[in-house]
Length: 248
Image 1 (cartoon, one colour):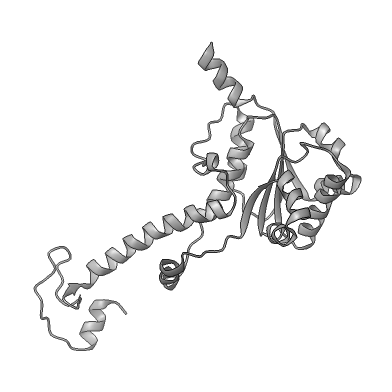
Image 2 (cartoon, rainbow, N blue to C red):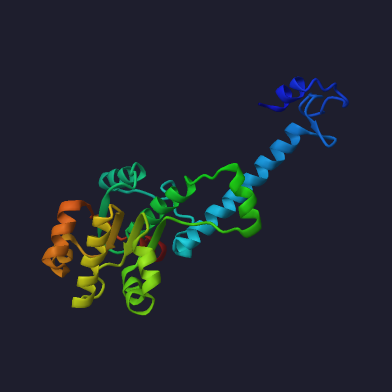
């Protein structure tokens, strides 16, 4: 029931002049136009939602450099690049992705854009805003982390490690930067546990496909081959292109 219906149902006679903005005289609350109050609250909640999403991005571990990364501000120079970007824009966070290829070609930008999209699409009930205003505490079901730091957490902060690998959507960057039996086994452990729990994972590596295969255990490769969509990013290093343009 809206304000007009409420006042009519209570048979309350108008006691105010019509609002100069909304032209009503039946929706006053404590001497103020109800629609004005509602619009002000909606603006406050929208601004609060923007702040909440910003905090969620930080809690998700998105690096500061990529906090503003979106699909719109990612420039494509090849058709293959455009196709991968389009595939990621339409991704429903229900599959696994392996993102391989050269350094500096925007893999992390696209991955963080994917994470930001998930966070920006997170909405809340109106009642939640009062709680946020008091505590500003919000949970995040997705995360970005570099593999070497995940290995560090496994050894030093196991509870935090478990919390991260149980996120509904997890991006693991810099896979394969350093090879060791411990890290290979850890990668399989993470992939296997998330597979069993039907959790979506994105792996990012600067290695080409053949080199990436070579660092994996047979068990890890089998899991990836069966359950991951593999994107091979074969376009040029954007940082080098930009540098050559600047200094040529």
